[in-house]
Image (cartoon, rainbow, N blue to C red; front, top):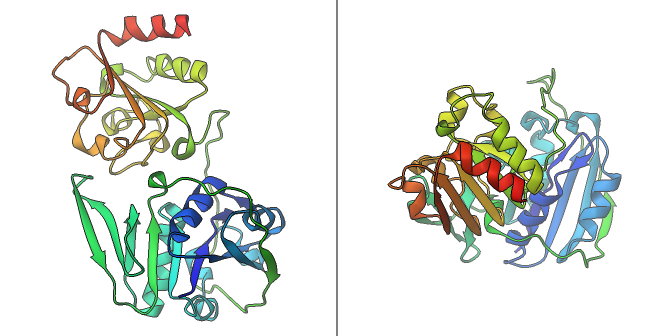
Length: 308
Protein backbone atom coordinates (compact mmCIF):
# COMPACT_ATOMS: atom_id res chain seq x y z
CA UNK A 1 0.00 0.00 0.00
CA UNK A 2 1.48 3.33 -1.15
CA UNK A 3 -0.11 6.57 -0.01
CA UNK A 4 0.32 9.99 -1.63
CA UNK A 5 -0.85 13.35 -0.30
CA UNK A 6 -1.24 16.30 -2.67
CA UNK A 7 0.01 19.40 -0.86
CA UNK A 8 -2.06 22.52 -1.29
CA UNK A 9 0.31 25.24 -2.49
CA UNK A 10 -0.74 28.49 -4.13
CA UNK A 11 1.93 30.59 -5.81
CA UNK A 12 4.61 29.07 -3.57
CA UNK A 13 2.62 29.51 -0.34
CA UNK A 14 1.79 26.29 1.54
CA UNK A 15 -1.72 25.95 3.02
CA UNK A 16 -0.08 24.46 6.11
CA UNK A 17 -3.19 23.76 8.19
CA UNK A 18 -5.06 22.03 5.37
CA UNK A 19 -2.03 20.01 4.25
CA UNK A 20 -1.00 18.97 7.76
CA UNK A 21 -4.50 17.72 8.63
CA UNK A 22 -4.70 15.83 5.33
CA UNK A 23 -1.39 14.16 6.18
CA UNK A 24 -2.86 13.33 9.60
CA UNK A 25 -5.84 11.59 7.97
CA UNK A 26 -3.68 9.71 5.47
CA UNK A 27 -1.18 8.49 8.08
CA UNK A 28 -3.92 6.53 9.82
CA UNK A 29 -3.21 4.01 7.03
CA UNK A 30 0.59 4.23 7.26
CA UNK A 31 3.51 6.42 6.24
CA UNK A 32 2.96 8.74 3.29
CA UNK A 33 4.71 10.53 0.47
CA UNK A 34 3.75 14.12 -0.35
CA UNK A 35 3.73 15.75 -3.78
CA UNK A 36 4.54 19.47 -4.00
CA UNK A 37 3.67 20.91 -7.39
CA UNK A 38 4.07 24.68 -7.67
CA UNK A 39 6.19 27.39 -9.23
CA UNK A 40 8.25 27.51 -6.03
CA UNK A 41 8.39 24.70 -3.46
CA UNK A 42 11.51 25.47 -1.40
CA UNK A 43 9.82 26.72 1.78
CA UNK A 44 6.76 24.49 1.41
CA UNK A 45 8.77 21.30 0.96
CA UNK A 46 10.87 22.03 4.07
CA UNK A 47 7.73 22.50 6.18
CA UNK A 48 6.21 19.29 4.84
CA UNK A 49 9.44 17.34 5.38
CA UNK A 50 9.20 18.16 9.10
CA UNK A 51 5.71 16.61 9.38
CA UNK A 52 5.56 13.34 11.29
CA UNK A 53 5.12 10.09 9.27
CA UNK A 54 6.07 11.72 5.94
CA UNK A 55 8.66 9.47 4.25
CA UNK A 56 9.45 11.45 1.12
CA UNK A 57 8.54 14.82 -0.36
CA UNK A 58 8.49 14.91 -4.16
CA UNK A 59 8.94 18.35 -5.69
CA UNK A 60 7.91 19.48 -9.17
CA UNK A 61 8.64 23.14 -9.83
CA UNK A 62 7.09 24.73 -12.89
CA UNK A 63 5.24 27.99 -13.52
CA UNK A 64 2.35 25.95 -14.89
CA UNK A 65 1.50 24.90 -11.31
CA UNK A 66 1.59 28.39 -9.77
CA UNK A 67 -2.22 28.66 -9.53
CA UNK A 68 -3.12 24.95 -9.07
CA UNK A 69 -5.22 24.65 -12.21
CA UNK A 70 -6.62 21.12 -12.48
CA UNK A 71 -5.84 20.91 -16.18
CA UNK A 72 -2.14 21.33 -15.39
CA UNK A 73 -2.28 17.80 -13.97
CA UNK A 74 -1.77 16.30 -17.42
CA UNK A 75 -1.73 12.60 -18.24
CA UNK A 76 2.03 12.36 -17.65
CA UNK A 77 1.78 13.57 -14.08
CA UNK A 78 -1.35 11.50 -13.44
CA UNK A 79 0.57 8.41 -14.56
CA UNK A 80 3.02 9.17 -11.74
CA UNK A 81 0.17 9.63 -9.26
CA UNK A 82 -1.50 6.37 -10.36
CA UNK A 83 1.43 4.30 -9.03
CA UNK A 84 -0.05 4.88 -5.56
CA UNK A 85 -2.93 2.93 -3.99
CA UNK A 86 -4.32 6.04 -2.25
CA UNK A 87 -4.24 9.73 -3.16
CA UNK A 88 -5.39 12.21 -0.50
CA UNK A 89 -6.10 15.94 -0.82
CA UNK A 90 -7.91 18.43 1.44
CA UNK A 91 -11.60 18.94 0.76
CA UNK A 92 -10.94 22.57 -0.10
CA UNK A 93 -11.33 24.33 -3.44
CA UNK A 94 -7.90 22.87 -4.29
CA UNK A 95 -8.89 19.24 -3.64
CA UNK A 96 -12.35 19.64 -5.14
CA UNK A 97 -10.70 20.97 -8.29
CA UNK A 98 -7.76 18.56 -8.68
CA UNK A 99 -9.15 15.16 -7.65
CA UNK A 100 -12.06 15.03 -10.16
CA UNK A 101 -9.55 15.74 -12.94
CA UNK A 102 -7.40 12.80 -11.80
CA UNK A 103 -10.48 10.63 -11.33
CA UNK A 104 -11.71 11.44 -14.83
CA UNK A 105 -8.43 10.37 -16.41
CA UNK A 106 -8.11 7.22 -14.26
CA UNK A 107 -11.84 6.36 -14.41
CA UNK A 108 -11.90 6.26 -10.61
CA UNK A 109 -14.46 7.57 -8.12
CA UNK A 110 -13.59 10.47 -5.83
CA UNK A 111 -14.55 9.71 -2.23
CA UNK A 112 -15.32 13.24 -1.11
CA UNK A 113 -15.43 15.04 2.23
CA UNK A 114 -14.21 12.06 4.26
CA UNK A 115 -14.54 12.55 8.02
CA UNK A 116 -13.17 9.20 9.21
CA UNK A 117 -10.84 6.50 7.84
CA UNK A 118 -12.16 3.06 8.80
CA UNK A 119 -9.80 0.90 6.74
CA UNK A 120 -7.78 1.04 3.54
CA UNK A 121 -10.92 0.77 1.40
CA UNK A 122 -13.70 2.00 3.72
CA UNK A 123 -14.44 5.59 4.70
CA UNK A 124 -17.11 7.68 6.41
CA UNK A 125 -18.47 10.98 5.16
CA UNK A 126 -21.39 13.20 6.21
CA UNK A 127 -24.47 13.50 3.98
CA UNK A 128 -27.82 15.32 4.25
CA UNK A 129 -26.21 18.41 5.79
CA UNK A 130 -24.42 16.26 8.35
CA UNK A 131 -27.59 14.57 9.63
CA UNK A 132 -26.42 11.16 8.46
CA UNK A 133 -23.05 9.49 8.12
CA UNK A 134 -22.48 7.41 5.01
CA UNK A 135 -20.01 4.53 4.95
CA UNK A 136 -18.37 4.09 1.55
CA UNK A 137 -16.29 1.14 0.38
CA UNK A 138 -14.19 1.59 -2.76
CA UNK A 139 -12.97 -1.18 -5.06
CA UNK A 140 -11.08 1.21 -7.35
CA UNK A 141 -7.42 0.39 -7.88
CA UNK A 142 -6.52 3.94 -6.87
CA UNK A 143 -8.56 5.46 -4.03
CA UNK A 144 -8.99 9.21 -4.46
CA UNK A 145 -9.94 10.77 -1.14
CA UNK A 146 -10.74 14.37 -0.23
CA UNK A 147 -10.53 15.00 3.52
CA UNK A 148 -12.80 17.13 5.69
CA UNK A 149 -9.84 18.61 7.55
CA UNK A 150 -11.93 20.01 10.41
CA UNK A 151 -12.32 16.42 11.68
CA UNK A 152 -8.57 15.82 12.02
CA UNK A 153 -5.74 17.29 14.09
CA UNK A 154 -2.51 18.64 12.64
CA UNK A 155 0.50 16.31 12.74
CA UNK A 156 3.49 17.08 14.98
CA UNK A 157 6.51 18.70 13.32
CA UNK A 158 8.96 16.00 14.42
CA UNK A 159 9.75 14.40 11.06
CA UNK A 160 12.76 14.59 8.78
CA UNK A 161 11.64 13.32 5.38
CA UNK A 162 13.83 13.29 2.30
CA UNK A 163 13.12 15.89 -0.37
CA UNK A 164 13.49 14.76 -3.96
CA UNK A 165 13.05 16.83 -7.11
CA UNK A 166 11.44 14.96 -9.98
CA UNK A 167 11.09 15.79 -13.64
CA UNK A 168 7.65 15.38 -15.10
CA UNK A 169 6.79 16.76 -18.53
CA UNK A 170 3.42 18.49 -18.35
CA UNK A 171 1.40 20.97 -20.33
CA UNK A 172 -1.95 22.71 -20.18
CA UNK A 173 -3.60 23.52 -23.48
CA UNK A 174 -7.11 23.71 -21.98
CA UNK A 175 -7.13 26.63 -19.56
CA UNK A 176 -5.23 29.85 -18.93
CA UNK A 177 -5.03 31.63 -15.59
CA UNK A 178 -6.41 35.18 -15.75
CA UNK A 179 -6.58 36.51 -12.19
CA UNK A 180 -7.50 35.82 -8.58
CA UNK A 181 -9.71 38.26 -6.71
CA UNK A 182 -8.79 37.66 -3.09
CA UNK A 183 -9.88 39.74 -0.14
CA UNK A 184 -7.04 40.34 2.29
CA UNK A 185 -7.60 40.58 6.03
CA UNK A 186 -5.57 40.89 9.21
CA UNK A 187 -7.92 38.39 10.85
CA UNK A 188 -7.24 34.63 10.92
CA UNK A 189 -8.33 32.53 7.94
CA UNK A 190 -11.86 31.29 8.57
CA UNK A 191 -11.37 27.55 8.09
CA UNK A 192 -8.28 27.37 10.34
CA UNK A 193 -9.19 29.94 13.02
CA UNK A 194 -9.32 28.83 16.67
CA UNK A 195 -12.15 31.28 17.38
CA UNK A 196 -14.96 32.30 15.01
CA UNK A 197 -17.66 34.94 15.56
CA UNK A 198 -20.56 34.65 13.10
CA UNK A 199 -23.53 36.89 12.46
CA UNK A 200 -26.90 36.03 10.97
CA UNK A 201 -30.00 37.69 9.59
CA UNK A 202 -30.74 39.07 13.06
CA UNK A 203 -27.83 41.51 12.73
CA UNK A 204 -30.08 43.47 10.39
CA UNK A 205 -27.70 45.28 8.03
CA UNK A 206 -24.20 45.53 6.62
CA UNK A 207 -23.53 48.53 8.88
CA UNK A 208 -24.65 46.58 11.96
CA UNK A 209 -22.17 43.82 11.10
CA UNK A 210 -19.51 46.10 12.61
CA UNK A 211 -20.79 44.79 15.97
CA UNK A 212 -19.75 41.27 14.93
CA UNK A 213 -16.40 42.46 13.61
CA UNK A 214 -15.69 44.41 16.81
CA UNK A 215 -16.26 41.36 19.02
CA UNK A 216 -14.18 39.22 16.64
CA UNK A 217 -11.28 41.67 16.79
CA UNK A 218 -11.36 41.68 20.60
CA UNK A 219 -11.20 37.86 20.59
CA UNK A 220 -8.60 37.62 17.81
CA UNK A 221 -11.22 35.69 15.86
CA UNK A 222 -12.24 35.15 12.26
CA UNK A 223 -15.60 36.53 11.14
CA UNK A 224 -18.27 34.25 9.71
CA UNK A 225 -21.84 34.66 8.53
CA UNK A 226 -24.92 32.60 7.83
CA UNK A 227 -26.20 32.21 4.30
CA UNK A 228 -29.16 34.46 5.14
CA UNK A 229 -26.76 37.24 6.12
CA UNK A 230 -24.68 36.77 2.97
CA UNK A 231 -27.74 36.63 0.70
CA UNK A 232 -29.03 39.82 2.33
CA UNK A 233 -25.75 41.58 1.51
CA UNK A 234 -24.67 41.97 5.14
CA UNK A 235 -21.41 40.05 4.63
CA UNK A 236 -19.19 38.90 1.72
CA UNK A 237 -19.48 35.38 0.26
CA UNK A 238 -16.15 34.20 1.65
CA UNK A 239 -17.48 34.63 5.21
CA UNK A 240 -20.31 32.15 4.69
CA UNK A 241 -20.35 29.15 7.05
CA UNK A 242 -22.58 26.19 6.30
CA UNK A 243 -23.45 23.42 3.89
CA UNK A 244 -22.93 25.67 0.86
CA UNK A 245 -20.18 27.71 2.52
CA UNK A 246 -17.14 26.85 4.60
CA UNK A 247 -16.94 24.09 7.20
CA UNK A 248 -15.29 25.18 10.44
CA UNK A 249 -14.49 23.44 13.72
CA UNK A 250 -12.83 26.05 15.98
CA UNK A 251 -12.23 25.81 19.72
CA UNK A 252 -14.91 28.51 20.17
CA UNK A 253 -17.79 29.40 17.83
CA UNK A 254 -19.96 32.39 18.73
CA UNK A 255 -23.25 32.54 16.79
CA UNK A 256 -24.89 35.97 16.99
CA UNK A 257 -28.39 36.51 15.62
CA UNK A 258 -28.31 33.13 13.89
CA UNK A 259 -31.46 31.00 14.13
CA UNK A 260 -29.63 27.76 13.44
CA UNK A 261 -30.97 26.44 10.14
CA UNK A 262 -29.84 22.90 9.39
CA UNK A 263 -27.66 24.12 6.50
CA UNK A 264 -25.72 26.43 8.84
CA UNK A 265 -25.34 23.78 11.55
CA UNK A 266 -23.73 21.47 8.98
CA UNK A 267 -20.82 23.88 8.73
CA UNK A 268 -20.10 24.51 12.42
CA UNK A 269 -21.61 21.87 14.71
CA UNK A 270 -18.23 20.14 15.18
CA UNK A 271 -16.93 23.24 17.01
CA UNK A 272 -15.59 22.36 20.46
CA UNK A 273 -17.58 25.06 22.30
CA UNK A 274 -20.62 26.79 20.77
CA UNK A 275 -22.05 30.01 22.22
CA UNK A 276 -25.38 31.30 20.89
CA UNK A 277 -26.80 34.81 21.35
CA UNK A 278 -30.38 35.22 20.13
CA UNK A 279 -33.49 36.94 21.46
CA UNK A 280 -35.70 34.02 20.33
CA UNK A 281 -35.44 31.35 23.02
CA UNK A 282 -37.01 28.81 20.62
CA UNK A 283 -34.26 29.26 18.00
CA UNK A 284 -32.83 25.86 16.88
CA UNK A 285 -29.27 27.11 17.50
CA UNK A 286 -29.82 26.61 21.24
CA UNK A 287 -30.21 22.85 20.67
CA UNK A 288 -26.53 22.55 19.72
CA UNK A 289 -25.13 25.39 21.83
CA UNK A 290 -23.03 24.68 24.91
CA UNK A 291 -23.87 28.15 26.24
CA UNK A 292 -26.92 30.19 25.27
CA UNK A 293 -27.81 33.81 25.98
CA UNK A 294 -31.39 34.88 25.28
CA UNK A 295 -31.02 38.62 24.78
CA UNK A 296 -31.05 41.41 22.23
CA UNK A 297 -27.71 41.14 20.42
CA UNK A 298 -27.47 44.95 20.13
CA UNK A 299 -27.34 45.16 23.92
CA UNK A 300 -25.50 41.91 24.71
CA UNK A 301 -22.63 42.01 22.21
CA UNK A 302 -21.35 45.54 23.03
CA UNK A 303 -21.56 44.68 26.73
CA UNK A 304 -19.55 41.47 26.20
CA UNK A 305 -17.00 43.41 24.13
CA UNK A 306 -16.58 45.98 26.89
CA UNK A 307 -15.99 43.29 29.51
CA UNK A 308 -13.39 41.61 27.29
